[in-house]
Amino acid sequence: MARPQLRYVCQSCGSVSPKWQGQCADCGAWNSLQQEASPAATPFTQKHSLKSGGRKIAMQRLDDEVELPHRLPTGFGELDRALGGGLVPGSAVLIGGDPGIGKSTLLLQAAGRMARAGLQVAYVSGEEAADQVRLRARRLGLADAPVRLAAATSVRDILTTLSDGAPPALLVIDSIQTMHSDQLEGAPGTVSQVRASSLELIGWAKQSGTALILVGHVTKDGQIAGPRVLEHMVDAVLYFEGEGRHQYRVLRAVKNRFGGTDEIGVFAMEADGLGEVLNPSSLFLTQRDRPVAGAVVFPALEGTRPVLVELQALTVRLPSGATPRRAVVGWDSARLAMILAVLEARAGLGFGNSEVYLNVAGGLRVVDPAADLAVAAALVSALLDAPVPADLLAFGEIALSGEVRPAAHAALRLKEAEKLGFAAALAPPGTKGVGRLEVRPVATVAALVDRLKARP
Image 1 (tube, rainbow, N blue to C red):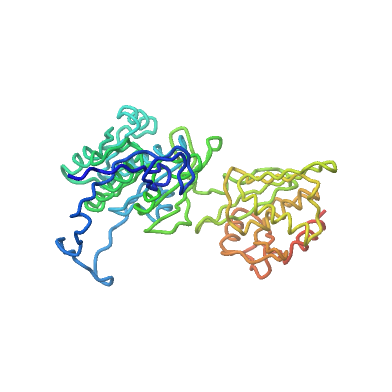
Image 2 (image 1 turned 135 degrees about the vertical axis):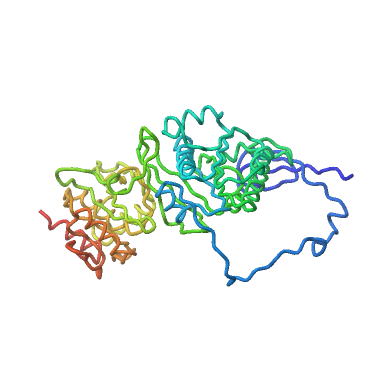
């Protein structure tokens, strides 16, 4: 019998090397190569053809009349929104997030609500004992929810137990890095173990029609730990974002085979668990009695949901010769450098001797390019000490020529702003007003500076 050859697998990216080395040649990680045994290569396995000897599979037509699976509501409208309308039977969903952000709390609440709705739900914890999960469920008010609970790490034991009887409608694995498959050697959490455990669980879920949710740990870079192929194996990848200092949490989809990736779900951490936020704009708008220089409201668009956030800018004049600082929280620092360069080159404003600070109120991360005009307005307002009216908002993309380009879904943004009582908006030319909200067109950054200078 051929001896299994030894190989070294990187625990960060999954690349294989024939010998150990201190740094991975593919991803550059240090001390990430661990020894594993590769399958034995024999003359039969090397020469055998896969074109015969298998079982013929049934091919179907794309236009066949088949009944599509019905989505399962999770009891959380915000979670259903991020999933594209609910859980699809037989699908695999991977949820990642920082430690303590509330992943287990969210899934335990969803499992309890689905169980109370009459669905069979199984919750398997590989990190906590069953009594610890019961204590959390009691704190969340779910002590009477008929959820099948287990604390196990062996994939064989889990699938053997679930295969005995009717499969559940939902299976939660918390977390995939703690699962262990006895088909190969290696400690739980290694690349090979995570890949093998996920493959077995996802295959069983596809066969039984059970919706599978896997919880994944994240690295210090914010990426889900384990092999990158794990994100390709599942049907949807969700990230639970937020900071412990802030009350809100954002559930964002970065991959979804059954829906869009531009939807978000907003939650608020409360004493009895996570609660849905039906009006996210109330979290990110500052309530104040008078206008403040450097504060401008921007109607961000997260999927099909407009969210009004406040952009805050501060400029501090420095003595000549000092090196100014640029600090950004919640926005792209490279984008800020571009806006500052455009304001200096096209509008004649000087930020060279001033420190610039930009913050998105509430801790939200804004990636919408239409925030350029609102950022520019906040910077000009802070530099000129000219407060912007509290009922005025701004949106539009700024080009390097200084022109303000149109933004997508302007009517949707303005409709949300009018609903919240805003009276006017600085927008690109050609933008039509909605209801009683007045649109004040701004064609260039120079026109923006003139408009803000003209205000008393």
